[in-house]
Length: 297
Image 1 (spheres, helix red, strand yellow):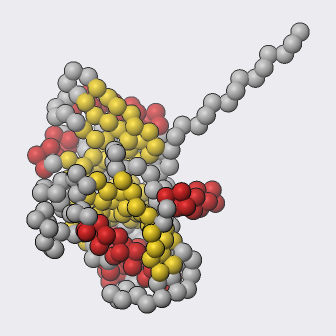
Image 2: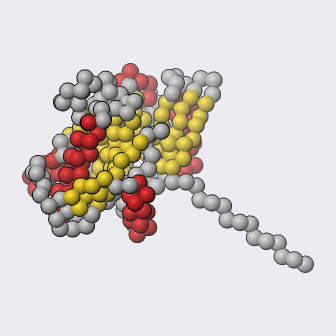
Image 3: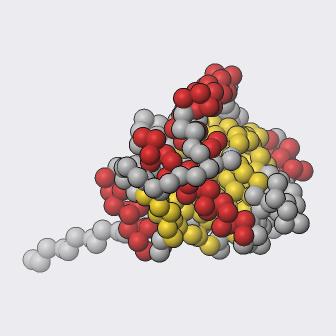
């Protein structure tokens, strides 16, 4: 008797997947990022919050993802906090003429979400103070640093090679829907090159900035800072109003880089980013590039 053939192994799910939810009273899209364990919810219709919360929670638990975030208008914040989300930050100019308010939820056994406590707040402020005192303070001119545009296939190859060896800082995965991306390679005078990326949407006027890996040493820090400044100017020239980024709240080096690049802390997310031994709180860094009239801030 012939042996039955073994079933073909199923393909692994994509790193990022859009999962829609639509009913008579609710319509939303969940952008599931399995690489960094984050779900961003884009809500298209107000109301029906309990049903939305239940669907979000079920998908997050099925995927093993702990952190869920939304960026909403100010008048929507209270509705989401009533169903267990926490107001965690603000992105000035996220919608060009109005701010985006970030609400987040750590999916756990309890109905109420986890939020950053007093100790977490103190840790973030301690990191900022240390960065101001001992972190990289990069001058406006960074001689010897190269900042060059990079094609997407080359940038993603560098990303894939890094992630095969271990966890990177960012994955350059989709954060929004139908957005564009730009990539730059930064090369320090001493040290290894790094790759930075910006995902932007002209219609809304905002951009998410990402750094592929944590820099090592002041020279690499200077090159990353130069890259952030360069991308900020390029984005401003094409009409982008607001830039934002997320970074571990206990990383003094990255904190110093964002401060030197003109960013400021406008939020703190509980379990906002992955780490080697579990999720870590994250600082929301923002920089207002221009106002909607086109004048510099």
